Structures are given as C-alpha cells and as structure tokens.
Image 1 (cartoon, helix red, strand yellow):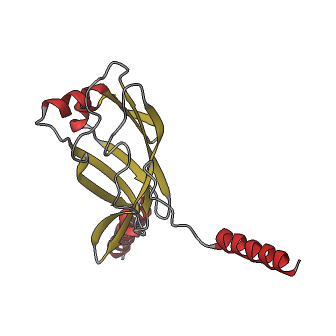
Image 2 (cartoon, rainbow, N blue to C red):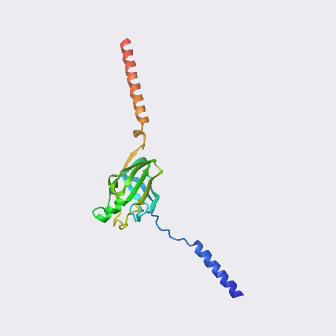
Image 3 (cartoon, rainbow, N blue to C red):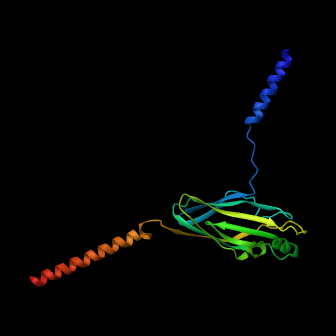
Length: 205
C-alpha cells in the first residue's frame, strides 16, 4: 500500500513539474515586428525574429490559402514617423520559380486600404507607406493563396526581401510645428507695429 502511494505521489510530482517547465515556443511564421529606433540621429529598423514569415518564403501548395500574416511596425524612435517599404527583391531567374510566383496571389493591406492585390511576380514594384505615431504599433496585413491548378514545386529557393526601408520623421518639436511659425510671425508683426508707432511719435515731436 505504501509503495502504491509513493508511486502515485511520484507520478503526481512529475506531472506537476512537467506542467510548470517552460516550453520554448517555435517562431511564428505569420507574424513579425520591425522595431524603429533612433540613436544619435541614426535610424535602426530591427526585426523581432530572423525566421522568415510565410509571405517572405512561401511554401503554399495548390489550393492553399492564408490570411493571417501581420507585419507590425513599432515606433520607439521618440518621434512620429512615416515608414516606406519598397523595392522588393524577388528570386527570379529560374523558370520554375517564376511559374510559382505567377501561381501565388498576394494581397497587402496597410493604413486601412489595399495597397497590392495581384500575382506575386508583379510585387517587385510594390511600395507600402505607413504612418506610425511615436510609441505606437501599426500593422501591415498579408494574404496569400496558391492557384488550384498549380502542379509545380512549391518553393522559391530564396526569401523575398525588401530592398529599401525609408523613414521620415515629423512632429518632433516646436521648430517643426505650425505653432513656432505662428509665434515668429506674431513677434515680427509686433516689432513692425512698435517701429511704426515710434516713427510717428518722432515726427509729431
């Protein structure tokens, strides 16, 4: 009886231990975050993971469809920013790869509107612009589907990458706001009025 009780307690302890031991999560292939920082006037864009998401390295087979892709732009620069992603580098040059790109239909949504909705082989000229206020995260949504009739290899060999990220900052201080120019204008106008009044007094004297 004591042996059975001991075995039961041991099994219970093992179960509890297994429940609290953290399990390393596999990187998600449907979501990533690009963190925007600015140090000493230099902008850095750092992805949250090095693994490719499904729209960067598609492996969809005929008839497969995914609409859960999200790229988050997280602005930690301290200033409001406008981020532009452009100049997509497609792994072309191989007939099989080109055929696969033509069989994939890509839809990209950003800023509440569709910015691309066509076959993937035409995405080289895609440009995505998103306004990201300081301290906030803004999403870019990706949807991808493979044609039902496609019968070739479902691989590109290389990732699809952005050739260019550009960041424009605005609203960062008084010198970039309309308030500054309004104040300057008021000061100049006041100075002109003072000069005119003084000249009139001199003439009357």
